[in-house]
Length: 218
Image 1 (cartoon, rainbow, N blue to C red):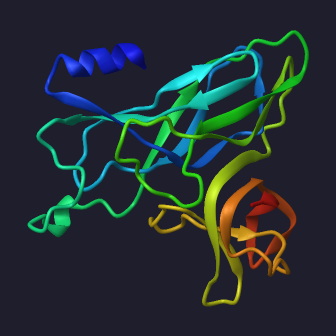
Image 2 (tube, rainbow, N blue to C red):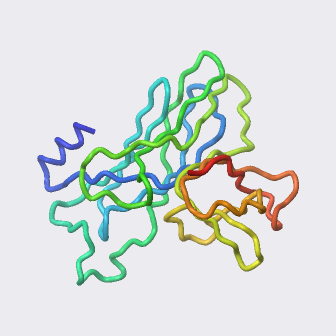
């Protein structure tokens, strides 16, 4: 990251750190094999620069610290004359590749990312951003279970026109972005930072076999 900042300082670009609002990844992966991670990343204001995922890994975790390279002449805040076509209302929905994780036995690594503390907002300064744990990935030497995808981040619950409770990741507006909650009786959750996994339910819920199992929220 330091090298990127130095390079940006010598050009007409500036580094604008961002946050991960939502993350999805395989619950289990083979040892030393890279794997893909879906990310919903907050955008830096009205106009966009070049996105960089900022991926690192060590013996305990995979960490995403995304940022954008933005022209110095680009305003971060929306100016009054900004046209609607210039404004991005949704997060950047993208995919990153996590490096293969080494292990001599089956074990877990944390999945972490730069995050908002209370609510999804795009940071306006280069101040240090808090890093949150979105969940864990299990590394197996053989035969990882491919039936589940872990997920975590900011999300809200809503009830659709069929009366089914759904979870919607923050910043997602594309059709089909929400997931049917496996526990339709959960009335306590409305919005927050959640962890869980996406899998095929033994019995369809609201006509959907692919559902979200909510494990924790805060």
